[in-house]
Image (cartoon, rainbow, N blue to C red; front, side, top):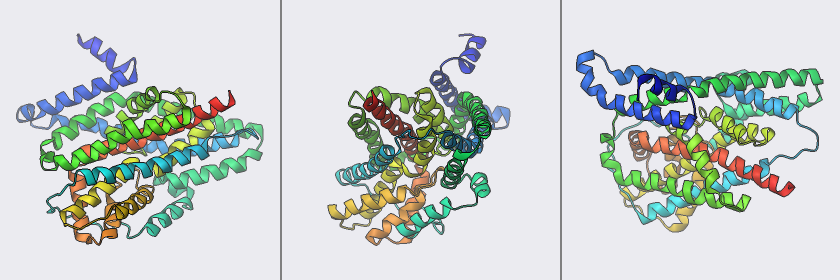
Length: 413
């Protein structure tokens, strides 16, 4: 294959194929970097890693503005009497998160894991109770709108955009048209940013693999197996069952589409917030109801956290098993409920779920010191754990949105 053909494949055609090319090229750069570094005098992977950082920052920068104008425009232009699928989607979000925590409990009991607790990590910013997590959510809802946009507080952005959208439903048609045009303009910017996803993935993969590699994960193979195995089970068994329950037909074509087109980018960006524009773009291509997905996608990035629930549950039970604490199955079910609630408060950034581990550990009397060490373990295995967690979280947002929208369309037909 000549160079012009490779360039053509990289910048044109199917986005998933182009991302796959970026993935392969990133792995190659990571492999050759140690060989070339003495000759070049610098790390090639570190240099190309800047491309990945630019891509992720671009997504994070545009996401708050996109959500703000998209939700506001959708609600402002909503026709009186039309129905959305939000109730069904929220039920799927909460049920899916709880079932994920339950799967994690069962996996942790079937394959009890112990870890060497020697890593220190500061947990001064970790919440101390479920009430604190829920209170933070309320405070985020009433945040200053400009601060919410600047700090990428999506709950605050969503609250203000819904409020303004409702108020603007009584505005003139000209005002509504301007809002819609502004929404379209921001959506076009998002489309341009997403078209650079292959370059972003190329940089992210090269830098990550060259920096940490996979060797550091050797001591945590069993823990990673339980974590990632639980996430795969939820993605390929539990979620399809929930989707079938809604649409009453083979769910796997939709599941594969969401995993391939949303999960892949989320895996490398490791941020549900950064993946919001990707999910909205996919929802649009799936011809879903804009009034629904413009609200459900950013909401899902906050409360639909199956992967976070699994991480909190498995790492908490690993700490419990390491300390030799006896845990009844009833207590573990309580952990599932707490983990589900905590996961809804998990930050939409890389490693956001880890700070909630001390809260879950407190159920079993595990000290803050041990819980802090589990956070450290989480950061060590984050190269795979957090990436897989984010892929599950983010792809499920658009999956459940699509399932609910399709189910409603079937009822109307």
